[in-house]
Image 1 (cartoon, rainbow, N blue to C red):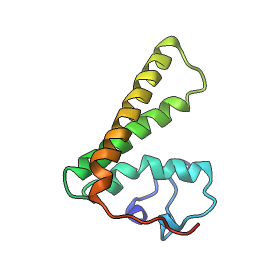
Image 2 (cartoon, rainbow, N blue to C red; image 1 turned 60 degrees about the vertical axis):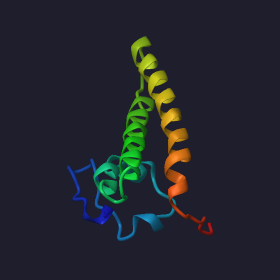
Image 3 (tube, rainbow, N blue to C red; image 1 turned 135 degrees about the vertical axis):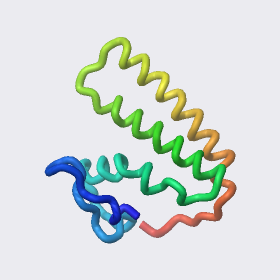
Length: 110
């Protein structure tokens, strides 16, 4: 599904390779592009309520990543970062308890 995402701007989001899950040695820019495009790519991929859980987790990860990338923080942005980090921890714990047991997964060899 990442392959269907069009590029955006000259240096904003580049076209993805054929199979994004097989990408090795990703650059920070490629990882960032994958994260920025994750919401539309994952939307509707899983049945409810798991779909909403995954999308909420991805949205919070994007928020946290954007805050973490700030070059300079104010007291207010640090407060927002703390709140987002706490929310992210809560959502991850809920994800592990409610969503993960709904799927049979196996680790792939490195």
